[in-house]
Image 1 (cartoon, one colour):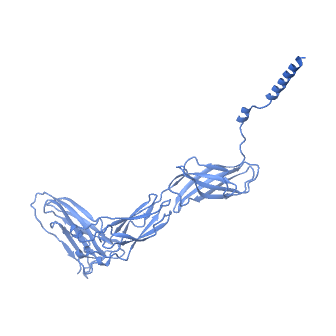
Image 2 (tube, rainbow, N blue to C red):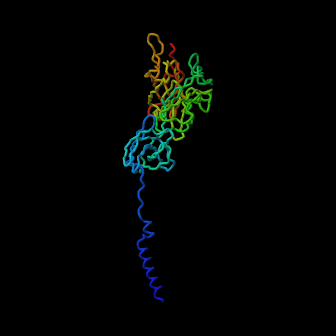
Image 3 (cartoon, rainbow, N blue to C red):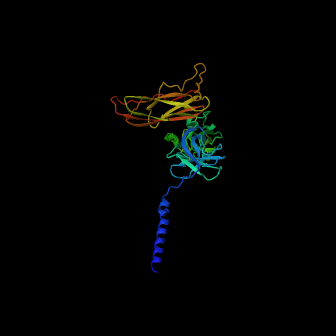
Length: 415
């Protein structure tokens, strides 16, 4: 009576063991490889780029492979730039491609210009595939390293030096040089235009304008009489306010301030929010460049010669009508015969004009009569306005006795 249940239990255990042996274990099920998803994949990504006058052009090559069992009638690709610093990606182009049958592939290439909002830097390129233009990407490919470099913005002035017109009060009709130098003139209505162009490949960011005061170039005797504004120029009007796109230009109209110094040279500086900087020298229409020279150490028994160049930066011919050479203590500086700014017509006696954009020269001799530092200034009065230059020299002990022999101190060409 007791053997039958025991046989039955053994039989049941054997059947159960045989049944469980045929089933896969849970661990084996978890480690089994999953089948690869069948979809359209982006492969064979290639990139190249080229800076142009209007921005950076990026060419992207790619292959779409339809690994599904169904044809794809509408295909859309989007192109993104990924900043190296990990900031947000930015779209720079789209493309639509032809119908893609099941198992087929398509190789394509597209060139797009990078938008003006992109700043300078290195970028990776991402290609995104979707079945609709704005749909979520179902497949992407990204370059493993930076593939595009956008060069910085670069502000370039049309002219490094811009002459700003002088008021009529500074013109030589019926006035001496000392009268002109002491004037506190009203600001002229006429302005000079500065043109700035972004020759780089990125936007400049918001532009800021500033006028940096330069040297007054006035000798002590005249500095006490002339006005002393913080700057001699001001911005009358400008289009350089917002961000300047690559290849675009803007303008700054500059006028002289009331009481401005006719000899001063200030500097207009434009600065972009992303580091682009341009500087333009604002100068008088007629000027010496350089405006100062050092004769160095000269023995009291010797002499030294320096030549100054007078530039006519205006758009009209000008004539030199007066010249003045003065130093602070003694007659140790004198005009030399070898200069061209006093040339005149032998038949009419009229001064020969300096053509627009031209120049002439003035030579000065330094012959110190005493030991020590000496300072002088030279002024020329022209039909385009006055010009001023300063000079220094140091007298050193010499073998010969000290003798002062004044040379030419001035000249007048109104014949």
